[in-house]
Image (cartoon, rainbow, N blue to C red; front, side, top):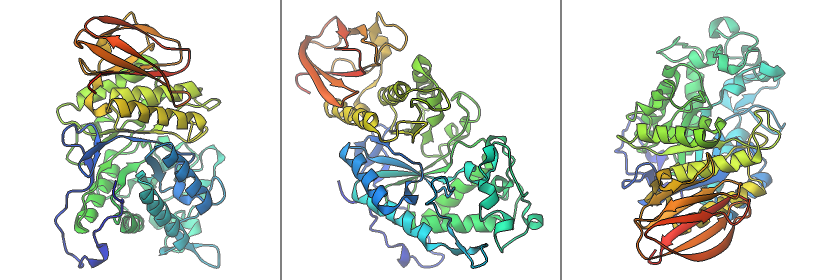
Length: 469
């Protein structure tokens, strides 16, 4: 795989010039647009990370995290542009003056040096990056976080505007899901805030100045927003226009907060392929079992007339988190989405997800092992091939007659699989998802129903292929 660094020279673009958008190396695969391709070849994005804004991490810790992911054959991270000081080493993008206030017209070069380092180091390791431009949790005081209280955009902390002219208040104690923060109403189609919007625009332009030098980046406007549709649409258009002027084609989505993928909120992206090039359905990961599978397939069917990659950049599930989800939930969700046809899957950071712990690493390795036997973009969800199946006992994706990928959640499942379309000899290869290791292999005869039993009570995957595969 070639390096991700773009060969385009952004600094050579004349002011005001508009270049023809070249074919980007990362784009929906022409033969099956539910999946991504890189330089014309289909590619499956699998990942996990222990934080959402890895670019903020100290260099040593960042490199170790990326190396661990690459060693597991993972190739995607999430990167929010977030600056909230949760761990103490995070920095803001703006320069802090001697009196403690910030000047929003001057940059803190450390913030941007860190961002550039993350882009450079992921490119070296062939790791893709899904950026989220805005994170609503950065601009709130909810839960006693005090993030807005100390943030540079708060008029009390900068030299650029007052509460009166900006329309901001001193505190925002409500959960950001209440959507009361005027920060997210600044665009011309909303409240047309001519004081704050120019600073937001300047921030996004600075981000693009660095990110557009690379070809391994996807763009999501927000983290699980419940805001107005016009906010995300404005920034999607803004980024695409700026990218086009630099001669780049970029791919964009929005991530909505509603846990119900059938809600009208999600149709704001589903129904607008002209603006949103892929969809992020991470919030489906609040669902469990058969409902989790069915909801994803509902969206896949909804998009079938105009298929686009379906990413899940936040796979929830870890013991002890506030939602009551478990480690097993996280593994199941990752693997159900894998077989259901997701283009990109990442384990969410602890304690809401497994991050990049040993279980996540094993699950990623196991997924790559399955992919080595059955490229997932060559099969489709096919649970109709299963019988004698209890809810959530097993899931299958298949190209009947050629290949069958089956996942058993940790239950020691036993089902009947319809192999009537497969004539002759088949090879059954087991993969232990919990260890990321190969299990037993056996010969299978096609042409009829076959009783398939997991080798043990762990999470298991089966790859059943013709001897010619």
